[in-house]
Picture 1 (cartoon, rainbow, N blue to C red):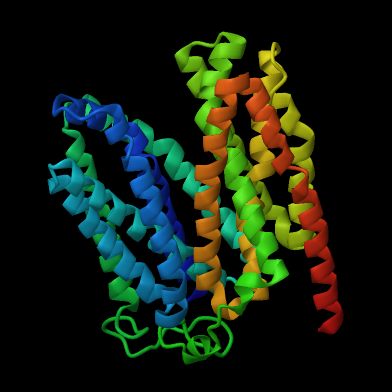
Picture 2 (cartoon, one colour; picture 1 turned 120 degrees about the vertical axis):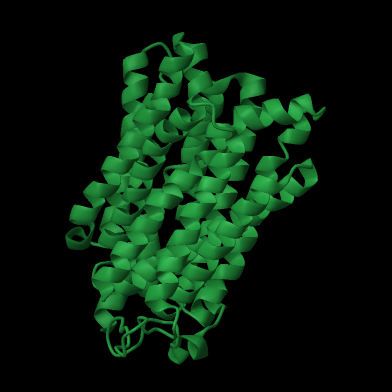
Amino acid sequence: MQRQLTYLGLLGYVFIGTAAVLVPSIMPLITEDYSIAGLTLTTIGLLFPARAIGGILGNLLSGVASDLLGRQRLVWLSALLLAASFGLSTLAQPWLFFLVAFALVSAAQGALSTGINAMIADANQEARSRALNLLHGIYGVGAAISPLIIGYILGQGVAWRWTLAGTGLIWLLYGGLVYWLYGNGGKREGQGEEVKGHGSEGTGDENKTQSKALTLSMLWQAPFLAVALIAFIYNGVAYSLLNWVALFMQESAGFSIFASVSVISVFYAALTLGRFACTAFSESLGYARTLLLLAVVVTVTYPLVVMKGNSAVMILGVFCTGLGLSGLFPTALAYGSRLYPEQTGTLTGTLNVAMTLGAMIPPLWTGFLAEQWGFQTALGINFVMVPPLILIAFYLRQVEKTAEKTV
């Protein structure tokens, strides 16, 4: 049954990767429509903090809910809520209602992501890092393919709101599938067989052991703070690069718009390849050693990104930085799930919040610093976030050794 849960999670994460690039794909059309209605770009830009706030709330609440309610129940509830939120955003015409609808979309999507990550970690206790790196690699595949599909649909003259409705329909079907399999108290409909997870415990839907063990004390423990810092640094470096590298390449290397945007695809390709590679070797190498290897790769190659004047070296730096960053979050999540197996949902939700903060704060200061001193300096200053990853990996290795001695 673990394999079925894993396949179900992988299917959901393909769709999450698809939905993740939906807003960037239709943002020009959203801007056009609401600009005609008289809104300024600043007002339209409120969509991004609204999504971030919704995502933070969804991750925080769903983390605890996952440990209390069970993974599968959270997944189908979140999928159905996400479908309803997309339906609401399709119908919402006034801008304020549209903002609220998209905050709900982000909250439900954050909850769904938390639920799937926790479900995959629970279903693969003997190989969490392999399973989670594969899961996030599948995410990259969905994120790479969907802009082509969305672009084709919009190119056929389909209104952008229908893409929201179509995405909602996908989640309605997915939520219905998960409910059919696991919605009846952990039993498959039409069968008397109870769906078992791993070990002697159930799937989590009726897992009272988890509920009794639920505590938030881990939030201020050093190992948890270490993996949370990895999540923040990972997304901080990645999103600062993704948000600004196209403009940086135009200014520093004279790239065309198409060529500069293609550099983002180079980063995503490396991110996906790196995660599939971590799927193959992270279990045999060990989680802390994998984190150390990735940290060293990022530390050595990130400076190549800001070597202004040599575009080939800069692109190589972007690719290698993507490889180094690729497995940091999935492996850190796997490490934390092994430390706190009864609180995987809370752990996942909190780490997703750390990633959301990483996606907000460093890109903001990168833009501010770039305005003062240019993108080369701003992206170069971001390097200060990278070397601490090596120290964190060494610390987690010591924690790992201590745990091995006590077993």
